[in-house]
Length: 291
Image 1 (tube, rainbow, N blue to C red):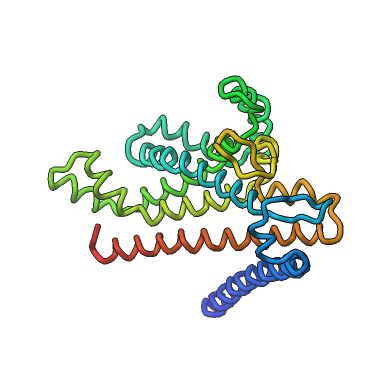
Image 2: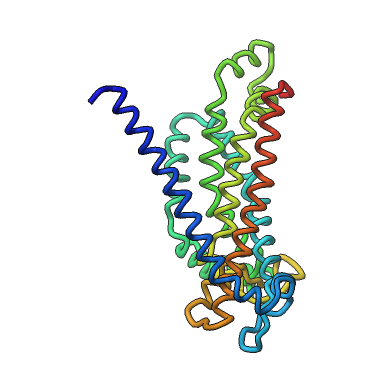
C-alpha cells in the first residue's frame, strides 16, 4: 500500500469517526426531545420551567427550584475548585521539585479514576455528620454537595491547567528572566496569562463534570425540592431528580423527566457557549498582542 493510500484511508477513517460521534449525539438529543415534548405540551413550557412545586401525584411539574439547585451546586464547587486547581497546577508545572511532582501527579490522576459512589459514600459517612455537628440541621446541604464536587473536578482542572502551563514556549520564560524579572513575576505576568485559554478549557471540562454528576449529589445534597435560603439548606439537582424518579415514573411524569433532561441539555449548552466565548475572546486578545 502506497503512502498516499495509507494517508487517504487514515483521513477518511478519522472523518468517519467524527461523523459517527455527531450522529450519536444527534440521535440522543432527538430521543430526549421526542420523549420530553409531550410533557411540555401538557404542562406548558413556562409552567414547567418556572413552576415552584414538583408533585407528580398531583399533576404539578415545576423544576425551577431544581434549576437553582443545580446552578448553585455547580457554581459553588467551581468557586472552590478553580483557584485551588489553578494554584496546584502552577505549583506542579513551575515550582515543585521533581520528587514531589512524581508523587503528586499520580495521586491527582488517581482521584480522577475513583467512582462517584465512593465520593458520595465518603461525604455521607464523614462530611454530612461533621456539618451536622458544626452548623446544625441535617447536614445534607448544597454546601456538602459542592465540597464533594470540588474534590471530584479538581483532577480535571489541575491536569488540563498543568498541560496548558507546560505548553507555553520556553522562550517566553527565558526572555522574562533575561529582562530581570523574578521567577514569580515571570509566572504571574508571562506564563499564567499565556496559559489562560487552556485554563479556561479546564474550567469548561470541570463545569461539565459538575453539572452532570448524579450519584454523589443524591447521597449528600438532601434532595429537597426547594429554593435554598442558604448554602446549608438541602437541595435537589436536575440530574438527581431524573435518577431518583425514573424507575417508577409513568405517563406525563415519565415525559416530564425527559423534559427535565431537555432543560439540562440547554443549560449545559448555554454555559458552554459562554465559557467558549470567554476562551475565544481571551485567545484573540493574547494573539493580538495584549499579553
